[in-house]
Length: 242
Image (tube, rainbow, N blue to C red):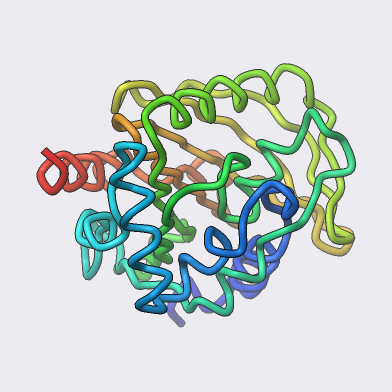
């Protein structure tokens, strides 16, 4: 039996995370909300906004995102319906919102555009599964995302609730020294009566936030998405945007 087939909770968890939490809907415009739908008119507006603030435009961001088989993982685009389900949800504690937004697949400061990908191991013996997403901001806003995330980690160690889900046991861990700055942390999602430990690795490359989420139901110590995958993604961002 392929090892990943004995991980149904991990598969369910990825869907839960897609609808768990995200930026306060009141802080983003209808155009920003719709930017991930791929509508030509919306894409044009997002491209114009990207030009105005010096951000990566949606087309370039898509080109900068990994796809196919990379470093032992199969990288696939996530359906818009699954992605968009994570928008507009709040943490029950304001100080936890940056963490809640990342759990939902977004940054708490609305991005010009976002690209989501699932990460599944190509090797049946590898039990680590997860996802990643790139969020295009102005460089100023991207720096603020990272600053607010660090603050949230200090002020929200006991966790938060959102959409009927509970996240707890939040603690910073050593982050890979990649990108212009990086943050990593562990967090546990309560699924039924089971706590599922997860690891998030978040990097900034100029105005692009790259977030990686991983879970390993057999060995939580191996939950983080491997560094070679992160390095490959950051290299592609640099190659496409330079």
